[in-house]
Image (cartoon, rainbow, N blue to C red):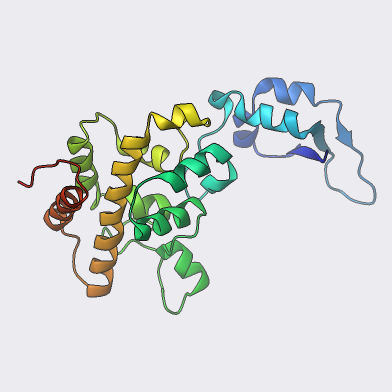
Length: 237
């Protein structure tokens, strides 16, 4: 079985050290790699099996630092096979499944991504709608204040008392169970959020390509129409 080496840099800044569980730094004091012909400080390492590695990072989520995009790892790096199977089994339109899949792979065509790879075609990484923040994955999907009115409307239709961070943690599977039984309890909500993502994707590019402002009323009416067409029993008001 392959082994992983979990490495902690000794001369890291204080903020990084403070984010580590104290028992880790104490347990690894004697694990050092001597350096030769270099001025680099020794590196503390821990050598363990894949089982120990998974157990350390998944057994207790309260010791894991919560990072926000673009610093957070892509969702695919921590999703279980059951979560992937659950995602592919959701009854959602094909176009939004592709959009959602690219989100999970961290491959959305955000302005941050496009500016990094196509600076001539995209000279800035600032959001087109609010013009105040960098458009990363989180901002493009739920974080932009211009789109938050629509998301609150969606939560109202779903009769959920949650904030926008909860939506993000659900669609990235961060706060969802990692086993099939637990995931099935969230199928209805995830299906509804998937349909909301359909409107986010369509309205986003309609506004960008048509050089039009974001339209909350159009987004809400399009969402109600989509639910009605797919038999969710939502009254068109």
